[in-house]
Image (cartoon, rainbow, N blue to C red; front, side, top):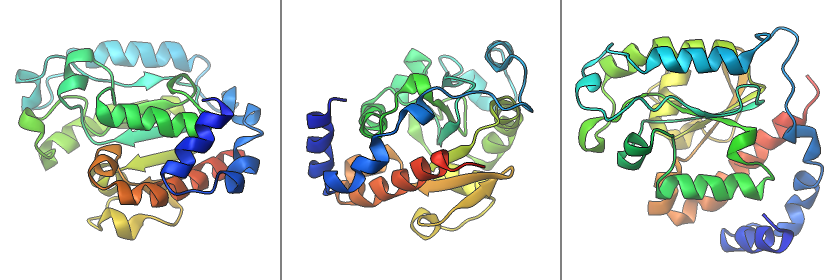
Length: 227
């Protein structure tokens, strides 16, 4: 995103562009993620093999209604992993997470912090679309845990972004609402995790874009910490 476009976007969501210039400027440090010494020697190949294995998954009844498995997208070596809820209609058809209206908003947010899909890894709690976009059921979430855990073993991220109630409650093992989980750093598998609103919620409640931006600032700051 060009500087003038970034400033316009921040102004539209009620954030002072000058306030975050220092945050957005040195992005080169996070644009070229490098695998940690403890990570898989070939995370790209490992993720490709896992995705291929998942294509024929029949661990729950969603296998009967899905168009295809929506596994994940992005760089398996990325330091930032984004976890959403479940595929919607567009995702089910295209086979990629966050490609509808909510996905376009996510792309804008990523661009505003100097990132793109190619520089992060995006996945969902569920790999298959629930019929009529209903909420995921507990047995479906449990069935998909196998794939989530194996993805995170390969990814070994530095920061995890949890978007929305289902992602936050599932990964943190809580029933607390999204609003009460925001504003602080959690841990998932020993990795710092930030909770924020799902982009679909922001489309319905644009007044929350400012608070969402604060969450993203926290995540980017964590990415830049030397740990």
